[in-house]
Length: 317
Image (cartoon, rainbow, N blue to C red):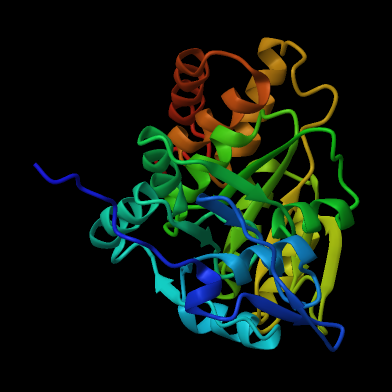
């Protein structure tokens, strides 16, 4: 029986010019190992990219992008001609098996998001997970991140932070989720759309009180702005303005040092009565339980009792 041989494959350099242009000079990209390369790209300023990232994008067999139109601008800016493959939440189930097959055959693929570090609020997680299951190499090429960029300019504690991403769109679900996050002992980081920003800030102020916060907008771009202040002040200011434009990160300071201290019954009632002025019994109990560390069942029972005694919010439940 005749021996079988594997078909000859051509390298990325044979299929397209594996180089890039930086500082007005053309550079040839060094070959990269087969596998999936997770490449961070700029979040706004195209200069915020590493030479390693440029070399990886140029040497890859293909660049997997959430929106090829966005990534095409970046590649064109640096003279990179690597083919693009669209991979997003609407086509992931169909495209992912093809990408995994290419990895299994020895391809070197670069995964990018629209901006920043992939897998942060984008569909790349399943591809990475399944690539690892089938034994493919997965390599990080680190770089820009909107989360970290916002964190370091906010003026809030950076030793611990919790990235939530986008909060629910509906107010009730949003307030409930904020209440669940209330006791986390670190700075909270959210993404938010311009049209929901004022409402979200209002809910953050209602649930978390006068904690310090920051709104980072259009980071690294020409119109970058960072506004800092107490949540009620930020919420009132945004409510009186036109919705801002651009990408937005919202940050909230951790609870105060006394947040975990045991509450007396009188102090618990005072917190509940304050919360019941603006929240339903259910939401008030969730908020106070999260802030005080006491069992929600106990707090909820007390909230019902206070509402039944004639609190102005007794009809909110």
